[in-house]
Length: 229
Image (cartoon, rainbow, N blue to C red):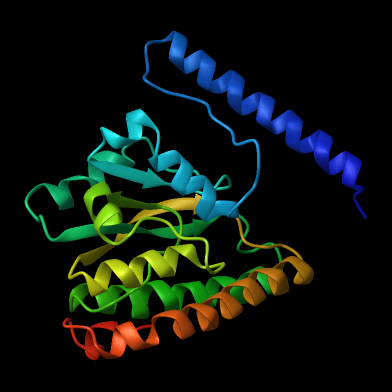
């Protein structure tokens, strides 16, 4: 089992690599900034909220979000942002995930099968009918005005992505899923990591429903718009 000290060393090493990479692109003239927080308050939701408070973020009309293990193609923004341009009611453009380790074991093969259903059936159907489907937390682009109108990022659950998606839908915003835009990622490779992921998602979803059930039932957009929750 990996010790806490070795994990910390590995984290600091990766952190340094990211900082150096940002500096190299800044030297080339790219408007890029490297930033960290002094605490982990709010975890991912707290980090996203802090990021949206930056001056450069306030000047942006759209914001793309990726987890650390996701690798978008160079043309990702060129293929996603146009969906917003002539569709002012669209708040989110969600891309599909692809996996670099889906054939590594039976566990990863099964996970890929579940995700294929999630994207092809749940999200594609929701997008086609302008019904609710949740933001997946990564590989997506948000309209910043929609985030602001929905109340911003909140850390009241462990599914801050679904939380924001529900609140934005209740405000009347629409989401678009684009299945032919794929972003490389990595599946949990051990059963322990998989269980931790699923526990976080399931418990977070149940906690969120308790918080927003009343709002959903009384929403002007109608319960059917959020049936995917």
